[in-house]
Length: 404
Image (cartoon, rainbow, N blue to C red; front, side):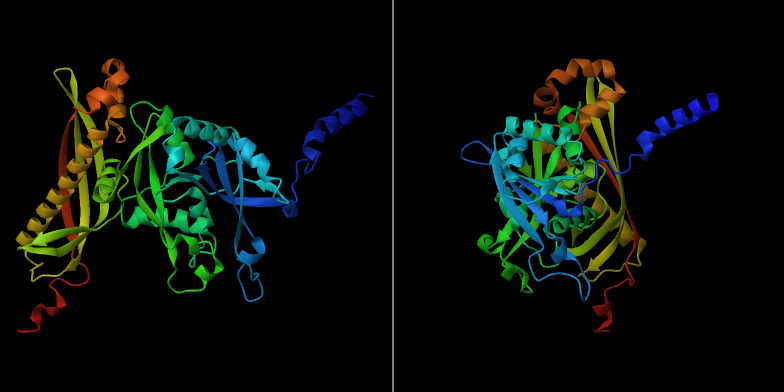
């Protein structure tokens, strides 16, 4: 009798793990949302664009793939993100599925509205199906709808073009960096560091960007491009940082992987190009008379990728001079960036965070008015050590011996 009771007990305990796919979803019933575009309408509602993938038109191979467009975009609106998403089901014959969403694009109007921003982020953070590791960008001089409806020729899925472009521009140019919804939320609720977001722009003939003819040319009429960093303060965007100042932000955040530094040599502009191969930034505080002072130390190693002037790269003194010029260029860039961000009174560098870690007691006194008072007047020192490790596959310019 005890044996049978034991068998029955084991069977009962095994039932939960033998229930098979109780929550199964048929692929034919799902619409995979690859990207979301969120605009603010004149009616103060969320206007949401859902970029859905057409699987049959994306597959590769000699026999696979259809003749249609790789994406379909449906639009909906609502007082909340949830309402807009539910309203979209009136237009789509399948259930919207967000587990593969790789990009969220928000308009500048949404980004500058604190209430819309925070409510939107709350919806993303609560949804168990939505991944908060999703990339988020701001549409600059464009609507979010225009960004998510643009067709691209090199990448079949436009969302892939944006996420890959951010990855490679971070690695090669150093003016942008990958930023997820998690990063944005952490920056908003965190202590001593405000978040930033990448800007994205539609350039060219916007009315042609979402047409199939845009895919049938070697040079498109409109294309997407990363453009600047947006500064977020108290949950809303306040301004843009661009070009070299944006690169200065990446230097300070220790996210610089590579870029190009152009130097003047013997009076000639754009004579030398130096490409970093390794870079490391350390930010540390010291305290003078009860006030924090920030020291930024950047160690950079690079190589000469271009020499457009007569120069002897075999001479150690020449190399040393190049190193000094590189240090000066990076230092000037970083100092200019710090000055600009201090003007905005928004600590996107995390200086407050390092002060907090080094001196928690002092931070308690400073944190209440850190951005608007202490950060704006903060003393920041920059030191750069740069080294040239190689000169490419040759030393002197190939044309230097032509007239000899």
